[in-house]
Length: 310
Image (cartoon, rainbow, N blue to C red):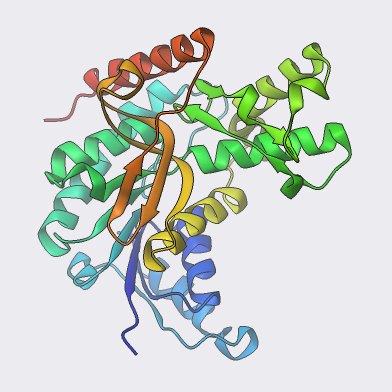
């Protein structure tokens, strides 16, 4: 049996939990990479020691040597600084840009045929940077964001309506986080638009809570950021690619005229399969939603252009 290989760059909370989810589902062999000596090795060994309990057969190893990502089908990049309380995504971009440039150059050297799945925040900006540095075709560079924002939106709506989160079908487009664009008519409870079920003022409050969902967690934790839900969102995307399931999810992808946006990575519905981003879908939006999506893209492009990366 030809078991694929996935490398996860960054052995922090998001990277480690992503690696754990992948091996616990017997999806791929995993290489956990980090520059901190001993950390990826220790975390990988800890996860590996649960194999007899969890019942998985794939292998997980940790390393400080980037050359060990050779042959990876997917490289997931979570490396970088986490956002601190009060820090804007633009400030975070300045800190993480050089890290992502360095990581991407190494991925290009050792795993030139991989699909790059970007998680480091601000994810839309970092995805565009990785695409530019790698020289990979756009379909092999994709960012996680929309899956997570949609899941947060699902939860908060479900709590308001007193139903299970899985009963809500939510769609969030645009930049990950505070410039997201929820699509109200496409967010439904068993086909019924939630706008018909939730009072406008409550719906707007839920949208705002979703928009700042990551910041809310950062404020509570004080010294960390979200990792449980982000790693679950990454796993969904990794699984869709490795199993060629053709799953449609909102993700950060290169737009070449869709929605009137060109030359920018932003969240829209995409089909994920063995080839990476196999299709991009342009759905009907209201004038207000389309304007909000364009503003979100302009913010991503502005932040990208301000990066001090050579």
